[in-house]
Amino acid sequence: MVVLVALPGVISVRTGRRGHCEKRFGKLPQAVIIVAGVLGLGLACPSLCLAQTEPEPSINDYLPPSEPEVTRDEWRQRIEDARRRAKEVSRERREHPELYKPIPEDPDLVATERLLNDDSLQRGDIVATKKGMFVYQGRSEQPRRDHDFVPVNPKSVR
Image 1 (tube, rainbow, N blue to C red):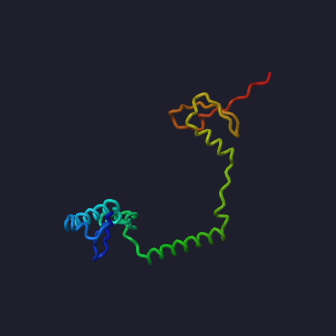
Image 2 (cartoon, one colour; image 1 turned 90 degrees about the vertical axis):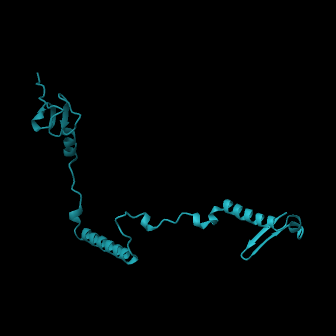
């Protein structure tokens, strides 16, 4: 049984019997065992070799190259400015809610516009709108005009 002990300033190899290694092999095998142990430790635990590890990413790795790193005070100032702007917008919306109400759209008007601007319309297609039924007389390769949609005449009653 061999025990390798490596402490700062103290390096020793112990075997089952005292002085057995020195009597049998001399001082050389002790040095070989120490070197082999250190190399084995380095291979088994590469994290202990600090010179070979990658440096931790810094904030510069995440910033675009054109922007310099900001100081803590500048960063805090930016945050305070953003908070102030947010409070101003919030106050403005509370004081004048009528300016921020969505404009109600007539769903029939929206549907008609979508239908009349449909690119899949072909000559002879009939479309139904709020204003009545129309036949598309235009050409699909040309832009749409109002006179491309001709009203469908109801059949005469007999």
